[in-house]
Length: 396
Image (cartoon, rainbow, N blue to C red; front, side):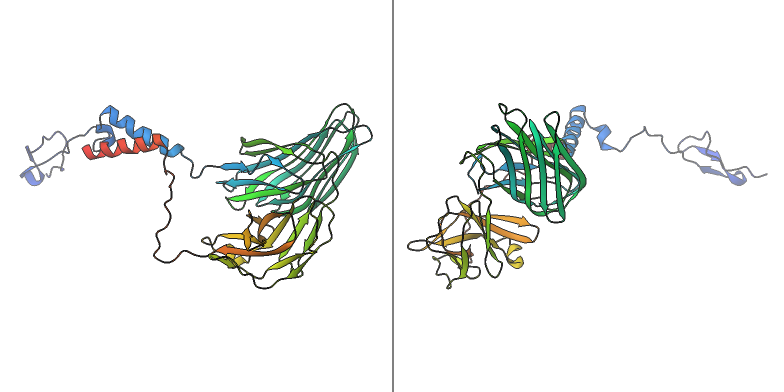
């Protein structure tokens, strides 16, 4: 009778009776402790701790840090307010708030008016909210893009609140406007506008607007991302003690150049001759003459050029607006902004003259580039942890 093959009870390398009564050698696999062969569990304790620290530090580092900055704390009528945004991921809950506090006398009306409000990305499942405190009668109006709303109300307790839940499209809004009279004349009126929603659009961009038709005072700007406040700064508004006149917008016949003035002005654009720019500058299109020659811009205006799409996508080109001075063209401080209709470049202007969109000439091939300072890709704790890990692995 044949016996079944069995390893039970046999010793490593010991003879045992196999099938058909023949002798052979059977082997049992040596039992190893759980986790054998895993270097992590054979490491000394200090090396395990170093490895765990590396994992924690690297896992906790964000892919790109959110950065929010305001360009300047003091503005004059007609000057744009620029909020630079970078590292803002899609899906983040973004909230922008502009809040103003202004004295309003008996029989006077407070008018907070944000114009040319450019939102560089969309806010999905969002909300527009406007409110005012210490007001008897108030109204709120928003115009631009696919959004138009108007609300008027008389309050019993001095508090006005209006809100609408909706997705807010990217683009330029002509007007965000609150008008209110004082409930108690000896106290200032406080009003604020808030836009919030789930961000969808470019990670790096700029939010811009101008403040018009308000007295001198303070404007508080706040930006919150996913519940964390990245900006809370008060802007000082200079000039004027009462409402300023409505702004004026003048556009060139081809629609590529626009002048926006906080004051009522009469002006026009005419096509100019080809610009003779200084060495190292190149014109990017024709020049434009802002007329008349005796145009009086009492407050700084904003001049904007539409940037051609193929030029806007060229990252190596440095663009700016130039003005013909007494002897030669001069470079104006310029900013590139994304709008709902494309990319534009803007600059403040105070007088008429000939203006042109220009760029710096590319460097000569083979020339040594200027030295730059690169930011460290890792924080100091992370770098130390990685260095310790490399030493640890080399000893293995």
